[in-house]
Every structure is written in structure tokens, then in C-alpha cells.
Image (cartoon, rainbow, N blue to C red; front, side):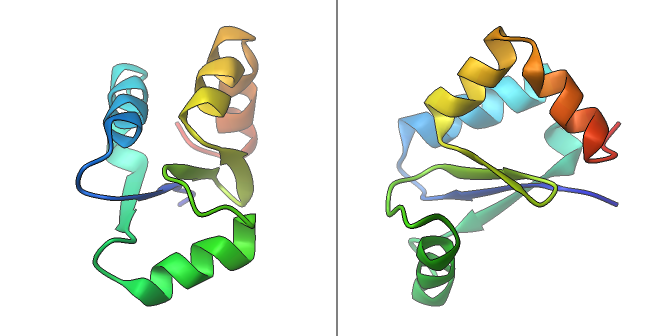
Length: 90
């Protein structure tokens, strides 16, 4: 099963907003949150994959979407649905 992976921290308003957007879209059950504030190895892994240190960093399937603003932009442009379907998430 494909998953939506979000690298996040406990106190991050943009992480909360991204999660709310995904839950509103009915995708909350596919969301895997990876807390980089609790696990420095996960933070290092996130940086290696994205070259970014800011959170959230969101992956849909194997594709790196980016942060909250990137997720909203995909949604507003109607591309989020296609990406979700491509990743096999229903």
C-alpha cells in the first residue's frame, strides 16, 4: 500500500495545516508522520532525500512534493488528485 509520508515536528503550524488538508481530502488514514524532532537519524535522512531542513517535507508514494505551500499549490492546480491516483492511494 502506498503511503503519504510527512516529516514533521511537534510544534509546527504548517505541519498541522498540511495534515488537516490531507484529512479533509479523506487521506488521513494513509498519512505516516515521521517526527524529526524526536529522531535525529530521521532528520538526517530527510535532509539527504530533500536537501531541506524545514518541515513539513511531504512525500506521496515515492515522489517528494515539498512543504505545505507546495502541497496547497498542487491541490489548487488540481494536480494533487492525479498524484494520489498515480501513487495508488484511494
